[in-house]
Length: 351
Image (cartoon, rainbow, N blue to C red; front, side, top):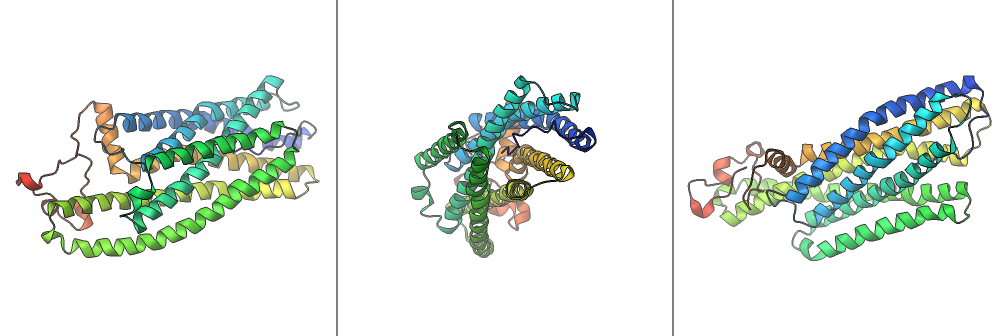
């Protein structure tokens, strides 16, 4: 999401401009580091999901992860290098703006970043709503959250935000466009996301209490009960991942939202005030790019199925159809209780 002033900063005196240019240089260097990390990590994620050696990703929820990974990948491939080149060009000459070609590259990068970052808000919101349904209404989840509905939502949201970005090219005032975008998307969606997270957290606490009561009865579990228990554990991991994704999204966007409200709704008369606002925008942009790079590590940290699929993909190993089941002895259930390895009728593949 890029909300940047179209007015030239060349009228600033060099003393006031110096701190801003060094901020851009620092941002460019960091973006040069973040870009390859973002690209490589998301390519690995998409490869692991595509190959799916353990058949763990054949659910509608996987499409949200894929969509979020694609938005992050586009940011790493296009937006971050475009921004970095513009910042380097700015730093090369303190006294004038970069050439028209650099400004065009920066403008294109800004449009792509608006689409990808805003789309990530929609994706995380939809992911949270679906996870609430999975936790609260587990027996109705498959009927409500289907593959077609998820794909329709992802397509409509992407088309919507792309069309919205095109409004700035049909003669609408740029400041008015930025204000509408700021209110409609990061502000309102963030507020809705906070409400959804609160509701999900309340439902999740009830879910954990029910899961704790099941552990005490594990000795009487049938094979079907044990498999259901492991699936519930996997759902818990996925829910925690959703909390973390939402947290880093809201944390990284909060400064951006505050700085933009100041920039768009408050008149800056002094040069030093303008400089500080521009520096704040650059720093808030950088926080969003850091968030983009962190998404993949949230998956790896909270989803054991992804880590196993990635290891298998990198090592070229093949896995069985039921290898997705996850066991964690530290959850209070021993491996022997969850998986009677010597009994073929209750055996599940071990990962």
